[in-house]
Image (cartoon, rainbow, N blue to C red; front, side, top):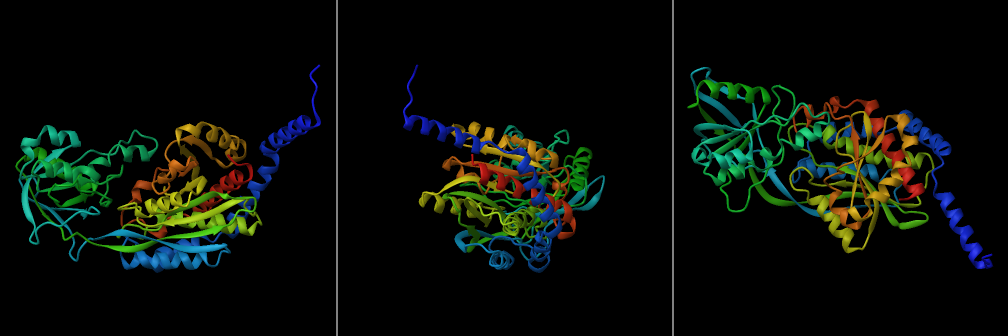
Length: 466
């Protein structure tokens, strides 16, 4: 019979005790998660924080006075929440201006319509037309590849990108991902073949009169031609008119331009961990927004979700074992400089983000979380989080594999877990990057449910680790 020493038996018992401790106690934690939901649904402050951010501050485009006001507003809120430390992390951000005059896209010689204005808005980071505008024939395409294939027809024309988001996709973010390349890269691709400007169908499944802006970029060495988005109703109208009159012309004018970079800040608050402070749990959203609306769903909701996680844990006396950090990122919309700067500084300090949870999909009813991470550690961490399923499922929450968030993605090399909060996506692109993204579009209870879901997951990860 094998002989065991006192030391080996002690070691064996220690392993057993640690293993038992690591097992999720579903009954106990179900009560704790219920307490989290009760606290948020009765005492949450996130909705009023969002009211102040959207109504008192308003649009928060990077480099603008509204962007600076948003930083100050959120720092003041953090200063009231009992963080151990609150600080601003400086970063340089692009400063784009839409210009003083409204953009114009106008059909000027249609045999079907005569002269007809299209509902339009400049795409973010786009450059202006000549001050008087210009008229040119139009070519309709449905992909970037089609521009290359029809390169001989493009020179001297306005390229009209008219590929809709796929309505068959149940998750609208997949539909968005399948169409948004024409917005981001469309101007550069068309310019390479001598186009004078581009019109892009707005990124939404709706047919309406609401134009959607959003980020675009120019490749090095191409002429920076003007780029406008047109409402989906106008895209349908223009396509029909082109079918009747292929020689149709459009008049375009835009005053948009890039200005010199500005200094902005990530707003950061931290509660030091009581047991393993070297492990960081991050919750966050992005503070900047486009200039057309109030940035309520995108991403004021994510910012106040993240702050509510902190308030709720404080209210319930849940002291985190790991360091808990709330980060409100600068410049997600048209540069990602806040997320990049945060990761750069974190990596230089040798920090380890055990998990990072980003909310950047709106303030709608929560459906769950999608997980991402370095391949070498991902399966093990995914398996651990799935142990929480029985606790989270009664609240309609599921765990899936997928993307996380643009701001936290640069942390992937630290080999922690990256998590995206996933609310119901069906209405998100009705508001995304539009003038309709206002405080009134956010439902108070849905917003609070999202904060409760995020708090619950952070609490479980903090207690049981990965």
